[in-house]
Length: 227
Image (cartoon, rainbow, N blue to C red; front, side):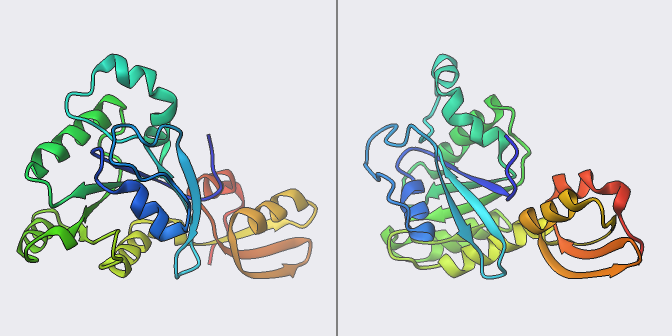
């Protein structure tokens, strides 16, 4: 599936707080039960970052240690959002005694889905359950670019939003196009899918400066204008 906005799939071990995070960011009413596979149907919600970048956030089924291959097969429809996502948000329960083991289990499932190596933002959650902030600081140092938050209280969410903006910065590249004015469908698509910063007409051409997602940039490669 090709979306017109970047898709971020929220992944993590079961009960790591994925749905709570989704609810916090988007106001989506996703069931947040402490049970296995509370989230079976992917729930996708739209979220606009402060820099006006729209992102589609998708909740996924909670992963488990040694998730059987047959189970992964049966959840393929639910988990396909992971392999198709532009960004993975790996949410980790930092208050759990087996943090590293749970992170490895999630990585194993991501590998199984052929999504390993995909751009990933690690989010250490439930810092409100820690006796102090030392573990959070330690893990953020161990995993550069990661953030520590509490999806329940909202602590650290601004830092998370900034990290999302940075992770999706490739979607914010400024592109220039020279398009014949009779190609009205292409011009309309740039308006619909991208973010037009400047539009002027020169002879029979439309000169457009816009932020566009990578797939549209590729489609319009023949119309790229030199500065």
